[in-house]
Every structure is written in structure tokens, then in C-alpha cells.
Amino acid sequence: MLTAYDTSLMSNIQKLFSERIEIFSSVEIIKISLKTFLECVRLRNFGRYGLQQIQVDTHYLNIYLWRFVSDEKIVHVMLDEVVGSTLHRCLDPVLMEPSVSQGNISGSQKCAGG
Image 1 (cartoon, one colour):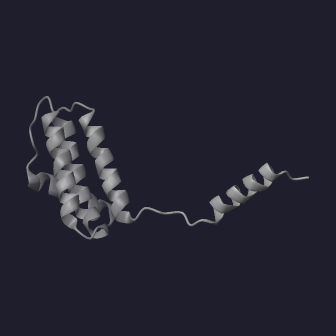
Image 2: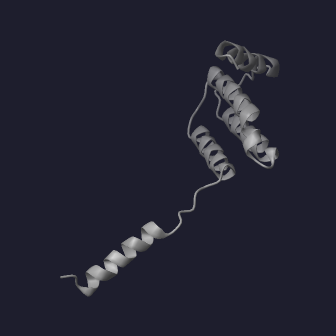
Image 3: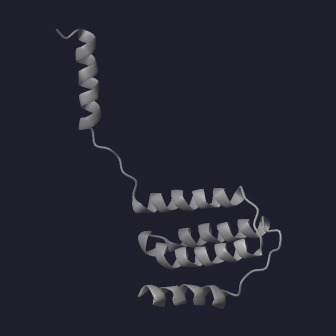
């Protein structure tokens, strides 16, 4: 036999599963991901090649993430913060020429058939 407590518990459980669950939009997911990326960068020290890898990574993200947000400025600003933070945490800060990082991206796209 069910007690009043059991009935109340069953009702609450049923309510949990019947309510609509809020799902993050792609913009919110991108913002959360970029903020997490920035925080991970802030917890590390980088060498010259680590900094340059971050440059390539952020350039790649800049190319592909803007189409998922309504204001692409958000992506640019957050990725610039990542590079700036990496630069401050780099022991041997030598930035890669922008044409080199762009060449790395376009070269990898050709290899992948993109």
C-alpha cells in the first residue's frame, strides 16, 4: 500500500520528467566553451611553440565559429583574449606571422578535402 509520502514522491518524480528541460543554444555553448578555454590558458605556462599552437587553434576557431553566433564580434573578442592571455603566460613570446597560421589552416583543409 502506498503512503502519502510515497504518493508525493511519485508525483514529484513524475513532474521532473514531464517538465521541459532547458537546452543551451549554440551561442551559449560557444561562449561557455571559449570562457573555459580562456580559463585553461590562464592556468598554464607556455613556451614559444605552445603560444604559436594557440595562435593556429584560435585562427581555426575564428574561421568556423562565427557562423554559429549572431554577433561574430563575441567570438573575435574572446579568441583575442585567449591569445593575449597566452602571450602573457609565455616564457619565450614569439608570435607567428599571421600568414603562416593562415597557411597552416588552408594546408590542413586541402589535406582533409575541405
